[in-house]
Structure formats: structure tokens, C-alpha cells
Image 1 (cartoon, rainbow, N blue to C red):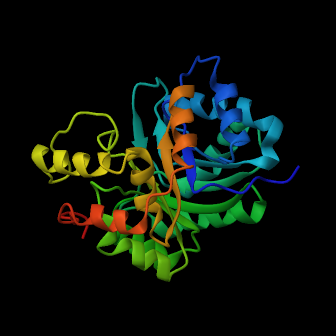
Image 2: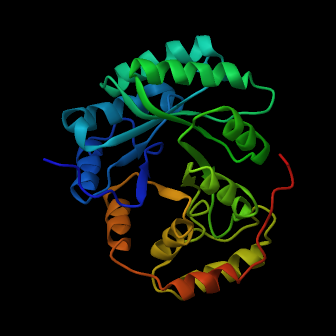
Image 3: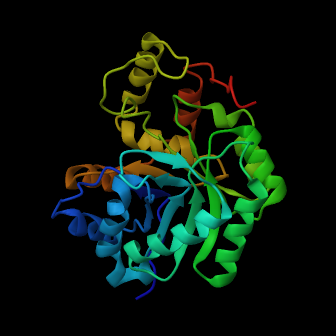
Length: 286
């Protein structure tokens, strides 16, 4: 059986119930409906989240794309973690992720953060080695920092950057989206629903926007008659974006995501949404 046509959404698996009996059915239902990109991290639930993904997807491994992340190392007691982007750590951590995911390769291996103080060339070398070994197919970073992203563009052969982007967080529009698109590097969005405020959560101050401004955006999005579709399609309209990651926990949430993909929001409506508020910009990490 061939891969279904990829939808322009992926599922963020961080919130899956660690003991939920519904997880396998949930993820298989997503695949049956053309959703094949699943994002996790070794940090989530101390690796348990990767185990959930592995159990659900290993029997149909060739039909899906799995992304996970590395760089946060738990201490021996499991009470805290430290940032560790070293080559030595990454080369060891990948084998643990592969075992938990019940696979012999990872489609996308991402550095789970990053700063200019990191040993960037050493980190890149680790990813390149893993790519040569066939343990990973592609690598990238999960970062909102334009200065870090720019360094990785210069030094690496990364395939993607995961970054926060939504109608209430348009900071990537200032520089990063066009910069990555020009470099033929894909963007994977997270925070696409702005902590749920774009669909059903109460308004509050968010990234420089007042509670009243957030309410203005909520009102505008609700007028589209499908806030979920509008929020997803807004971020996906930029040519740099390959996937919008949406977090799920229940079958009801998955059903809403699937239904949202049957609704087309006119491009002029998306443009109108972009004019509701002044775009916010990065004040740090410049």
C-alpha cells in the first residue's frame, strides 16, 4: 500500500495519555485520514511518549513520518534535565530513541532548542554522522531564535526548523519565514492555535498583545465559522511552511482536526485576519 497524500498538518503527540488505551486507535485513525506526520521528543514523559508512538506506528512504519527531538538530558533521579547538545550525547541518545520508537530510522531528528553558546558545529557533525549511518533521514532544529536559525542556515544542511507561529504570534513573518524559504528549508509550526485561544480557550495577555487585542482576534477568527480551519490555513499559506503541528489527546479533538481539513477559508479572508492586529516582532534573540 502506498503512502497517502500527506496533509499539511501533523500531530503533536506530547499530550497523549501515557496510559491511554485509546492511543493506538487514535493514531491509526489519523493515518486512515491522511495524517502521516507525528512529532514527539525524548524529553516528553521521560521517553514514554516515544514508546507510545512506537507501539502504535511500528506495524505500519513505512506509511508514516516520525519526528523526534534531542538535547535535553534527564538526570539519574529523573527529577530534572539539563541542556546537552554535545556530539557525544546525541550519538548515544539516538539509539535510545530508536529503541523506544521501535524503528531503525527516524525521519526527522531535531535539536530541541539551541543558543549561540552551543557547540553548533559539533552538534551538526553528530547529525551528519547519524544521517550517513542511516539512523536519521533528515535533521533540523526546534527554535524561535532568528540569530540561532541564521547560524544553522550558514553552517548546516538542515532540512527544517520547527518554530512557534500563529495568528497571535507572527514574529516569524518579520524575517525567518522568508529567510528559510529562500534557503529551501521547511518550516514546521507549533503553537498554531496559540494555547487554544484561537479556538476555545479564554483570552489573556499573549506575547505583547493585551487581553482585549486577543479578544479582537478571537472575534475575527470566529466569524470565519471555523476557527480551527482558519488558524491552520493561515500559517500554511506561507510557502515555507510544510506542516502545522496540532496537539491532540482525544478522539474528539482528532475528529475536529479531520473535519477542519474539509473547509476552505478564502485567501482574502486570511488576508483580512492578518490585518486585525499589528504583527508582533522579536524583542529578544535579535
